[in-house]
Image (cartoon, rainbow, N blue to C red):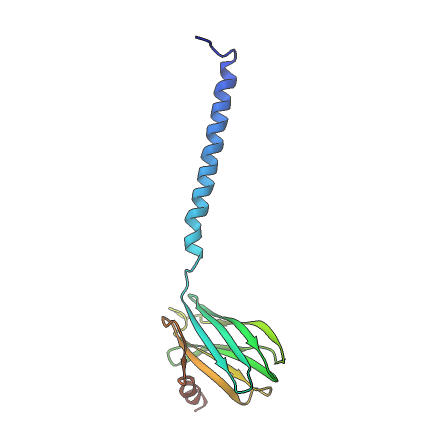
Length: 162
């Protein structure tokens, strides 16, 4: 039987290799465990608003715990702006709008606060003319639905104005 000349070196190499393998397994385990928690943790709803001239805003509402993210493709024919409103039942929590864009295609985001328990229950997404006076199209989005509804937003806006 042949014995290694330096037992301490052999044990040291084995320990170092074992420690390196254990560290790699530990890091891989942490990365794999964290991935599902951050990916697709929040519900989304798809929306589409448009006008008769060909402008449109198409994208997704993301329902966070105490905020809402509206993000989509905004294509303008003429000058248009888009807006969003976050609601908790009949109480408006926040609203926001884009800058005025003329004959332009871009990604447009509208972040909204919904700082109440449970977050927003409803989001209105719409498009307005260059003066933000005439609303050209709008939809109402409900938490839990996969697609927003057309025609309901007019009733929400009429209640707000009264």
